Length: 94
Image (cartoon, rainbow, N blue to C red):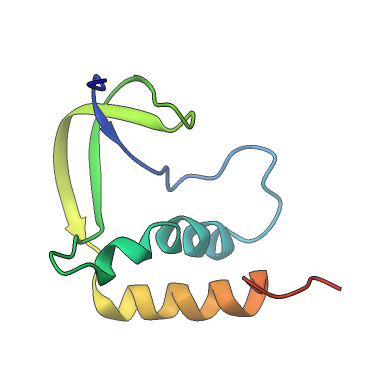
């Protein structure tokens, strides 16, 4: 089913988020890093656009997108380190 826009992750946290902003950004940046490991890898980017609705996972769908910046390796490395330190992915929270 064609979507009316590009599926994106928001970089601004919701109102209920009480942790530091860098924690939110690390989560958002790391959410789809597995896509960069494919043979024809994708690159993460920051963009603006017009919200057209929500996708199947309630993610924003944007049209009229305009790239602002690519996510560079130093940013991705820092996001991964923060995410692994503060969110302990794949490990027990106990």
